[in-house]
Amino acid sequence: MHHDRLMRMCARALDQGAQLVSAIRIRHDVFGDCIDPRSVVHFGRPEPPALDRMVTISPGKRKPLELEFRVRCNKCKPCSRRLQNMWRHRAVGEVIVANFEKRRTWFATLTCSPAYLYRAKAVCEEEAVRTSTTLDGMSAEQQFHKLDSVIYRDIQRWFKRLRFGRRGAKAAQFIYLCVTEAHRSGEPHYHLLITETNPDNPLLKAAFRSGLWPGGYAAFKLVSSPSAAGYVVKYLRKQGGRVRASKDYGLAMERRLRYSDPGGSSCERPEESTDAGGG
Ligand SMILES: [Zn+2]
Image 1: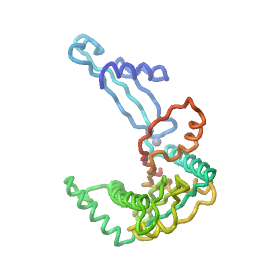
Image 2: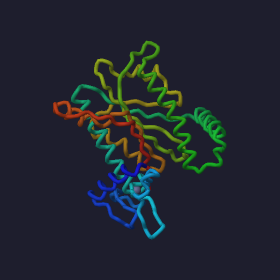
Image 3: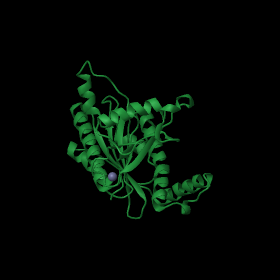
Image 4: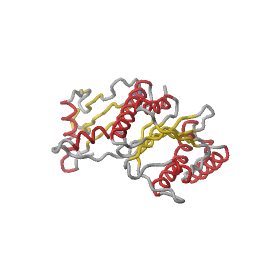
């Protein structure tokens, strides 16, 4: 990182309560109640003509400045509890606003048949070989993540079919929250909240039937109340639980407030993807 930029970051961190732990290291704790914080260190190396900006420790010994952040692990119990609460609030908020605007939310469960899993595992094996490893060479956790990522690609294709409409089914517009749950056997299945974004292009049950989920069993029902939507996060409690969501998922409340505030500025948010292993 550029030295000047790191200096500005250090100044801001010190303003917000960071500590100077040695002559060259500033530590900023932003891990809240996490019990297993991770350390992220930034170094500031000055350009060669400006070497005088190095910190001189003793004659002849000069070192670059270091800024260490201690951040949440997103895996321990307090971290998963916090993630669960965050996603619960987002899901409930999204459904409250949707109900108000006469948009419906579906609760979907997608499971994987043995035949489908067999194919998905073959894809994992093939991709692992390309990176000079094998599935057996990975830990159980890595294997699960790999399988999850391969299956999630099919979920994205399934979304695409719903969005474009197929075999006479109308195209639909929606946003989603997708929670991966590890089954007792270690195989994933998926719980989704799919909220219509345009009441003129609703998501009909016929669309689910024609835009078939290739993995096997799929169930759909309408979400009856906002609090019911919050239950989807309970599947995060288990090891391997993971959330994926549309770009603006959970910001409905904020969006409404912003639109009612003419001075409000808009901001972009990247696709959220969060791991939340149970402790
Ligand atoms: Zn943690």
